[in-house]
Image (tube, rainbow, N blue to C red):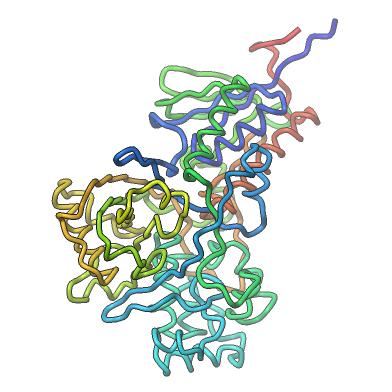
Length: 488
């Protein structure tokens, strides 16, 4: 009888990308070992509980663009869990300003810059400056090194400061001046094809009428997706290794017969292929062989979410809709606002509102961004709570007193290493070389560090990585190592 060798694949990283890639591989019959450096799975997807109510303290929604996340949920049997938001508007708050987020195409770029709601935020002068963009020559902003520089050149400083930058900070935890155009999925190509930022943004949205981003969530919270994936992996026999940081990878065979030795602590094992969903693992020599085209990696930084459960009938009307993005100049307001965003969670999600007692509200405040760690990190719980209550009061325009506080949860997150704009790259050169294309045989990269921010980017990245590995295994590009393990 011919002996059949079972291929084995290592998946490094237990966030959403790692879980999805492992699930795709395991359900195709591949032996999978997943390595996660921390004590829990899910990455930045996390939950907490106050007085018996469980809610998200990490990502709480996903962008519906492309339909890839919904397809994954359907494949997992979670179609019935998908839920839209309650339908309210988001707001923007700045120094002396508070207004609903205008009808926007994408990342805060206004679809109708001369509308009253836009003029309310950026003024008539700012609106006129933004409105003339279609008549500007393509050369304007052609050498801009970042999204912020491009918006400033083509739409004006006020549009950047009061609309685009608050949205970018809320979504990407970064200033627009620190974000390459390629970080917004599809925007670079749409800008190249359409010729103006406003037209490109409308293309991305598919509609010029809705504000913010088209998003959906899950009844019970986004964290239920992690629970379902982990349950599936356990049923499929995936080896889940927690507190297992991969410290080294060594290529054992070059070319078509590549195999990899993966070291985690004192354990060293061989695998036929490796899916890497976190930065800093793939051998650096491989990722540097690009003539300097790969964008540099920024140091990881910490942000923090503070969730407050308060009892206040004054919040029942939702004074700032479903949530608020905070402009940078709010730091200089009276009183100053340190938070970058607030989500009025029970106004955004009906399932959560149904679980809370009357007059109770869940407020999530976010602190920190790339280049500036959360100011709450060094604070004791009492001091952090006071700051969050003060920020909530200033943002919502309604006093949120300490006596109304019924519970508080703090959750820290480490921002994934992100690609920074290169000072020599122009916006005309919209596509960059990704680490995925530069890895040696048998290694495939996936996840936020290569695909961009958000589930709509991470999920297809992970599924594509698994498909690449499976195709290679089926084509015998990766030759299973017969010295390890065999199946009759």
